[in-house]
Length: 448
Image (cartoon, rainbow, N blue to C red; front, top):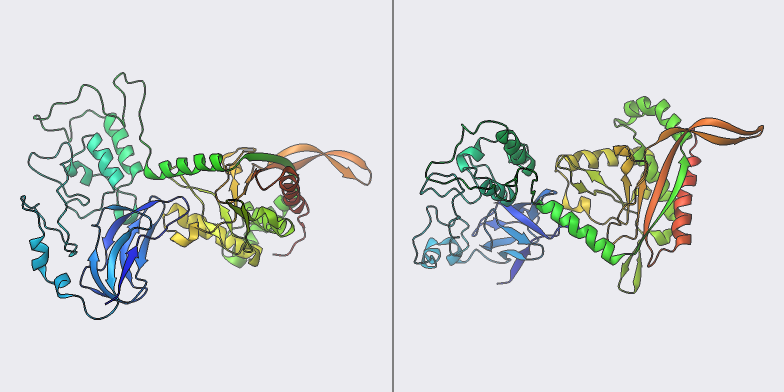
């Protein structure tokens, strides 16, 4: 009978692995096409993995809590007939158990694999007690990063269970445990002390305050490591050039201020500057389609779809880039709804994998943080990224039929970083100027 491998899906351009949170289906279970088999998570998104076919789960190749590289097989699905007898009978699994003493709880994945060896107890746990590999006594899931921090900081499982979690289903995030550690250091160590039998180290471990108390060593979380690798790879791949223009956006600022309340009442969403910027970018891409490309070796791949990524800062301090697909097919109201929806779900860690893939051009709003301009790094495999600076009131020369005047205007900088392998200065500069022209030509009498 044909057997199909269910592989770990690609969750984004910069994500190379994912953690198995829960097997919804076990070995021997019948599964229909598109029915959820398991739940997985990265530091960016949680997601469900559906079955590509109808059949029977023959074997699950990894346990809950294990981290698996993208593209690796994680389960075997038999597409015809009933489940093989050995997949549902416990005897073969028992025969494969190692001769060494078994852990307290046998493998429950029903895969026929040997049960995983028990993990070392977290520092501070009661002598002879091995905490669960990934779940506490409350059943709460702990990621590998959180468990690693807890072990380094000598946090017992019992103490970890008391930390409030802000993640999905109350899970403890990196920020939760680091905030707890910070508050714990400022209080006398009279609660949750380590057992007297364990000697305290003379110097604090890596990941906290150094021995002299003057520096702090902070280990990157997995998402930050991926971002770092992505940024370095982008600089190695593309020779970056950045061009700048200053734009008078007085008309669009006045229009937004005048219509923002009515826009909210009519469309049920706020109108920010971002969808207006995206609208101008889309128009400019139609004029200069060779900015909407990627490079494959010595081949240029021109994208017919215009999918705009919008860099979004997360509460953790990390960055994610959800993508508005076919942005040129949306009205300004449609763009506003898409921007607000994606940004809100990004901050809540509720984006779907496909919503952070497929971008052809990226916009980042550095003005959100009060910056007047920036030199953004290209989001590979794209070839250009636009940064929008803060809008500020400044005196400017205004040409009128009566001559030049000095007036207070709303001005901002745009900066475009582009891949000089395929985007020359003429193209990059012309494209950036065209975006500015569309923004300056915004109709102050435009209907909603």
